[in-house]
Image (tube, rainbow, N blue to C red; front, side, top):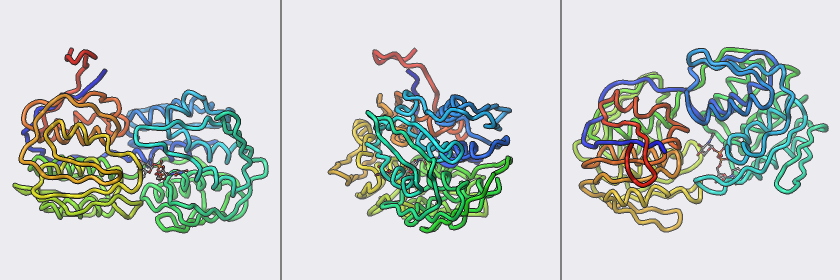
Length: 425
Ligand code: UD1
């Protein structure tokens, strides 16, 4: 098993360019199959989730090719509408392919995705949205057979602004005759990026970033070269790394507007933040003070994907902070490990109360989900002594070589092979 070894106590300092966003790239790769032409994705991050999506595209008959950090997808030979059982169960983002496969081939088969580390994650909203576009879906022992033979544009109302369901419906409707409206759509910046991508291919979508998205179907889309938006969660994590170690960073290739909720909380904690057009600069205080309440919410509320990292920072802040996780029902798996490192956190249902402590101490902990794992790395950077974080592969799902980025910023962190008996090889 791979893990990270972290020696705490070094300030995170310096300047770094942020990669393209995983949550923008995954739906964009899925949407690439809406055209038969080649699509070139520039600055495509080398993430486990991206490689998994690439494998799925290949299984569907697409040709994928890397040249440096540019990934080309060419789907003129797309023929397979059945997503392999093992992959659909294992990789949540396979659900993004449902909309575009239906858009291109008018039929799709997918195994009901399994649960994941942060909760059950149902797909009822995706299915309801597709049904509103005339897709007939039958469930045969966990396999969903989707027949899009009678697909039509229509009005889709989402009971909850689900990011994935909004994106799936956008992709399914892009090639449908007529205009589709998504009401109560999710407003995340990654949805705006998907709109930009599809429109650059010749699509006609308006309203992404608002609660009403209008998709005017076009007969065909064409190939393009596209650079996805910067990763606001990676940026937020690096800001937290500087905050928790008393450091100072400049992040380049970011969109400061997308970082407003995170910057607001870090400012509340005493950090000084300076935004420029495409960069942000953070100077941490000598002593952090806790925020009073942090509630995760759909965008433009505080992102659930930054909850764990902010919790790690608040462990070392003066005072008491409350975090309410409103988006996912079980996203506090990192709490027990933070407490093993000396934090004082109590959890009751969706609420966590963090009583700041003066120091954390290193020990062996385990990443149980992507962002929770990143939070343990942050805690390790600020802890006394050495921390070993098991399960680095989970962190690799969303951070490309996190150890290299943090080393470049002055952190002491290394990737290593761990023995299951607790030793290090
Ligand atoms: C996306 C992000 C993920 C982020 C999440 C919320 C990607 C690849 N992933 O995930 O990093 O944490 O948005 O910002 O973009 N739900 C249902 N039924 C559904 C769909 C969702 O009940 O059919 C529920 C979920 O269980 C969850 C909530 O809605 O409680 C939000 O989920 P959703 O917005 O769909 O998140 P994802 O698209 O899966």
